[in-house]
Amino acid sequence: MHPIKRAVEYKGSVEFTRSELVGILAFSLRLMDVKTAKELIAKSLEEGLLEEKDGLLVVNKSLLAEEEAEEDLFNEMVTHIADSLGWEREEVLEGIKALRERYGDLDEKVLAYLLGMDKGVDMSRFKEKLGV
Image 1 (cartoon, rainbow, N blue to C red):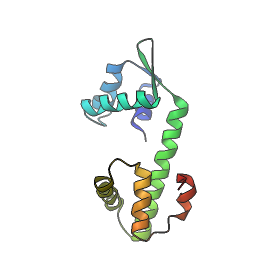
Image 2: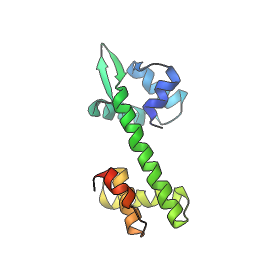
Image 3: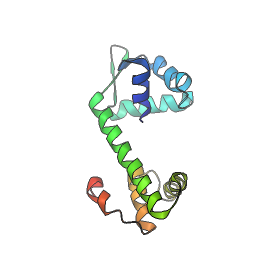
Image 4: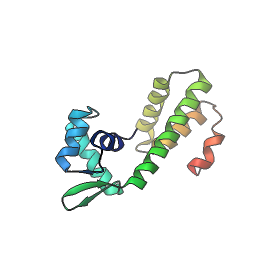
């Protein structure tokens, strides 16, 4: 689940002060450290997932739903690769991490797709969803 969605569920609102959101992510939910929480907020503002209105950070619900759908696709891909190869999920995630080190900051779904293809897994059912 996306960390911003977890924060929304925790607070029961889509509006946060910046320090409140950092506090929820870092201390209440213990999802990340303060620096990472601030980086997530900055990235989310750039991507439009968060909008700043009257000194508050407001979550864009439709974009959050899209983020969740993409995260579900990634998890589906990881599970498919693990099941096909008889690996644990952690092994697949380590393989994706190794590809990220080699290819740089590609989207995690693309990295998962590449890992599956490299290992001989039939990834055709994900091809259309990724636009590959």
